[in-house]
Image 1 (tube, rainbow, N blue to C red):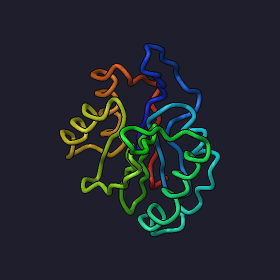
Image 2: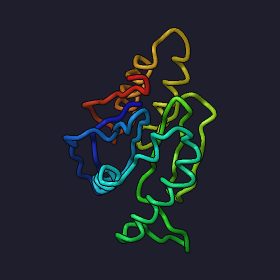
Image 3: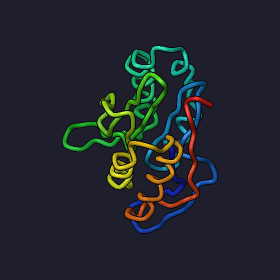
Image 4: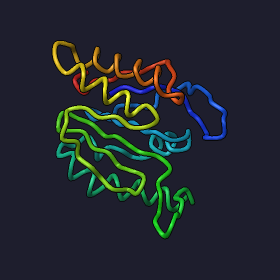
Length: 166
């Protein structure tokens, strides 16, 4: 899993975070788009359910409902046209697969062995698709991050890369 450290607010200011947007919970990796508050919430939550094996059941049964409750209890869910909107997109990955929790709180399990979220999603996905053979996962992620930085104004290094195998 890879990520940049740029935070934008949509009004023209940017800043680089000191801490990575991606982190490890045992053998599971988690990352998020969105502002600093989302990253602080994730780091403060008890995420041990994500490292017990059976990642899919942990995400559906424990993590996502708890995450949504924390956002709701702190007034951080936005309501648009009667739907609650999460101000971030999350990715949770392990050797069992890659899962995304979207802005509506819906959970998707990626069919491909790669994915991307955030501002640089499209160039990163293109780079991952195009480098599907002959390169290591780390090399593919580095290329995807560089492509995202080159073609998306909301992506900037430094870049962080974590592996489920480390």
